[in-house]
Amino acid sequence: MMHIRLVPVLLLALLCLTPGSVQAKEVQTSTVKELVKARHSWDGTPLPAYPAGKAEITLLRITIPPGARLPLHRHPLINAGVLVHGQLTVVTRDGKMLHLKAGDPIIEVVDTWHYGKNEGADPAEIIVFYAGSPDQPLSIKKDR
Image (cartoon, rainbow, N blue to C red; front, side, top):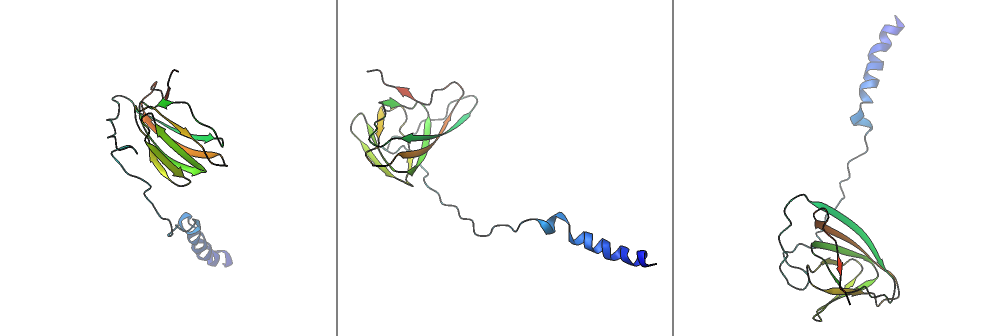
């Protein structure tokens, strides 16, 4: 008789332990901040159309030592990034400059010769997102 009386109590206890009741609380404090949205690169040049065919996304973390200057290069595809540490100056072949500090976003120039240099005392670390297609190079170095 005692066992029959315990059955409803056990069923009620099991219902209270459904997956929904033991899940973590939903976070109500998340925020979204748009860092940049643009149709032009940082120098004002309109961004080109995306390539036809299959898409390929590449995400790189690039670290530039203090005092270093990257070689003159160009990107044949759209890319954007965020400087997460340090400072960085981007210079185009015709002398346009962009100074970045930690937290700054960049919509990079496309098919424009440029270089980056770290004039700070700390390494510059940038996360860069490239939107291209398979077999498309991310960057092309200028022959001297």
